[in-house]
Length: 464
Image (cartoon, rainbow, N blue to C red; front, top):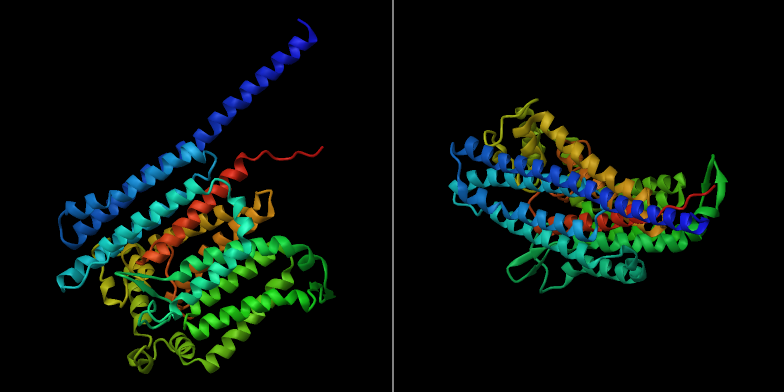
């Protein structure tokens, strides 16, 4: 056989091997995802059945069958990933599905009690929002074939994010709520800040890609750290002022802290400079000190945190009664919990939303609460891993920023209801009742899937 024929045969064999490898590896990822999803479906269905057995002593098939819309839509997303994003991370969707299902089961458990009192049911509404959220995730995964196109719309995303934050100030859209963060369109109420965090994450990622060199390479060396010049401090101070504006004007401490924390984290990933994190912490401390002195509602949250078990604070209007009830509920659950449907989480006000984690902690116990936290840890770590293994800076920053946002939001909410930090007005991702949060978080899932597929399928450059 001639050398040319030999080379042709070798190249043909190599092409066949590459094709087989390309077929085999993506299917392995999707098969792993499918196996996890089947396990998750069993857990979610069992959770609803156990709630019914524990609360009413019988299986009620109407809601159990209605909840099948969740696995149907998740499987539709799975099929789409098999066809369009076969290299996507196999753990993100199962974790998000499990958290959504557990939250739905606990909200349904609370509804069983409140429906006896003639109150409206939240679980049906939550199930409808879960279907909408999954439909949005499917749409994003279908349309956003290449996440890098988002880089072109960096500044548009920034204007959209700011615009979403300003929507509650429009008179005919705003609602009468404790915090000016909701808008009402017809029969629907929505929190635009949840979508604003995605738009601002895109803006931060695009902006930092364009300016990272100047932010990382210049500055003054002091105390072992490189401190940036005054002109480089501008972006940090601007985001800090925006966060303070959200806290002051919207009375929304949680969203302000979340946006500023996301920007500082992305800034650290972009530059690798610890000095940015230290300055961010200093600005957070300074902002908190000013807010406590100037804003009564922020001062009230700190009073409820520090003096939570003071009888005068518990009995005061807007006091720490809710916080104390949640802590007692988790203490009542103990190590193993009371069992789904057998606790009394309804004794805590707003148990389906702000205090969904103590509700689950009471009925699942300390072990169940730690298992939920582990799910969040794995979800956040997978997202950060997706970002750090990428080759382009925009995808790295975007994936890291979105994943850190989920982790920070969990820390803020779980820390608040367990009295580690003052409580703020956020929702626990995927678990808590609330359509806007659920839609935004499932869109984040879709974006992470697209980034992970691109990272895994893009060939790496080997040097040497």
